[in-house]
Image (cartoon, rainbow, N blue to C red):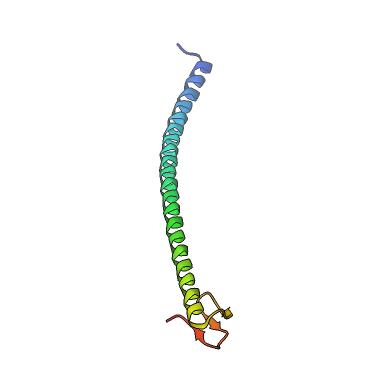
Length: 101
């Protein structure tokens, strides 16, 4: 027959076991969510790299367009000043204004 102290320990042991089981369940769920987060992080990194690549290609096309524009100005007007009003608008020294179509 168990005494009172031993019965108290049995009770506490059962509570401990339930708490650890619940803790194990929560830990497993946390590991699962963390793995999912790592997977999403990797996908985000891949998408950022792809975005950087596309942006670099876009910058290259902008530079090609600017070069073509400068060559055209040189051919038609020679070496004249160009004032850029914005990224897309410029005015030549001749007074001609060029805006996006």
